[in-house]
Length: 204
Ligand SMILES: Cc1ncc(COP(=O)(O)OP(=O)(O)O)c(N)n1
Ligand SMILES: Cc1nc(C(=O)O)sc1CCOP(=O)(O)O
Ligand SMILES: [Mg+2]
Image (tube, rainbow, N blue to C red):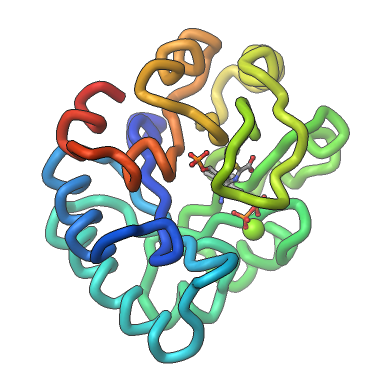
């Protein structure tokens, strides 16, 4: 995959939104986010048919704007929505199983420690999500923040694997994450909570 696609990676589910998620993604897409992850998860999130129906609407927006549509965790949903990719963490389905099921989809994997990095099947994945870089209020079970140093460490070990930082990244701190060697920043609240989404995406 092209690392440039990770540059402004927007993640969202309805639980993150104080207004219609369709409007939020439309504004973010128009403003220039480069990838989108549908992460319908945590308190207040939709399940079943409602989750699928929202996913269909969001998938369509990504299609219309030529933005890769990535599904978090849920392989069935990725199939149903014809997603471009899937993001899995250390406690999710093993990336090798994901690759066996989806030979052509983009696969992202979360890593927070050197041990995780060493044990990960890097040959089957397309990019790494490294974090949480900073404290985040969005994911209640987030690990201890690892700082931008983690980005520099991973980049040193893997100069060519596409790498995105995640966790507590703001329009101000995004620069530090990029300067540490990331190809992009993955954000939820920096966009969903922005009063002006176009401005926030431009600043990122
Ligand atoms: C780009 C990106 N990086 C990391 C994560 C976190 O994945 P995970 O650790 O599986 O946690 P959940 O998001 O599933 O709660 C991500 N989703 N995206
Ligand atoms: C979904 C997610 N994963 C994380 C990780 O560290 O793996 S942090 C996180 C939440 C990111 O939201 P915000 O940009 O609002 O901090
Ligand atoms: Mg996960």
